[in-house]
Figure (cartoon, rainbow, N blue to C red):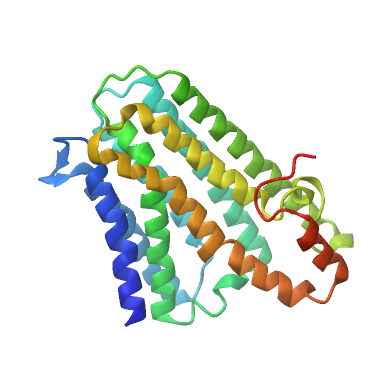
Length: 284
């Protein structure tokens, strides 16, 4: 029963936000365009769940999520009425982020032979279905601000707020890319087998990649501000959802539990936890 309620919330909240964020009068087959895009994002996950469950594999989970971002953004661009260069830039940012992260995670999971987080999930149809549904919610909630801006028919003059958001995205994207690269290089060194990373950006934050993720999506939401009006302001939930999911549900808590299991008895690891910020990087 709890899983049913969770699924209803995971689907209902994003659909509600998408519907409220829909530009006035914009519809597809009589439905609000944003609602249709949100339903499409969920349907892609549910269709991908079928072969994933039959094969008991999570190897194309992250790639499916990234491709969904690209698909719904392309759909929004095709629906939009003569999108301006500022709207195109938002779309291009999503393409760059999704293409980079999707290919990175796909290569990593194949090199590792799987994702340990799914070991006890993929063997259960209900738990695995929840995971795919949660990914649909992730796609809709994080991209809703961007899609609202792209679909806007208003010829809005963007200014300082839009520029600030763009700079936030650039900084967040760079942080995520550098952190991922540093961790990959660390793992590729045989001398680091069985060790935890505490160098580079990882010496300034225990989760610099997640900090970058949160910052870049917050940046896109700020870029969307010039296009928002009325109930569309609900998309300001987007960066809050990203933060909550990564820090309270599926990101940091999962990695923290694994870290304690592997290095919990290591004094160096305990010192690292005590002296390194969990998320917001230490500057000095």
